[in-house]
Image (cartoon, rainbow, N blue to C red; front, side):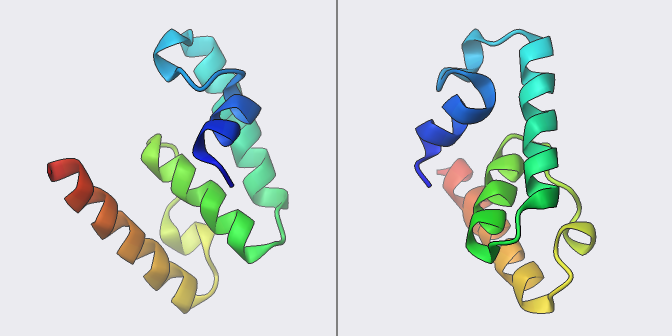
Length: 86
């Protein structure tokens, strides 16, 4: 999954700063629906990661039933936090 493609899919643009609050809300709602319907573990994790970066991801215990997936999500969160601090 390409990051810009995902932004375009859910928001109609890769430039999030150009969006109105209503467009952000509509895009994040579409992401939540797709996340709930997705059955492929890799695509589901990628969608969760995008939602996390946008601040709209569900809690880990809600998002992932599998402990290994929750651990991977925690690792991603740690890496993202470290990357943001640099």
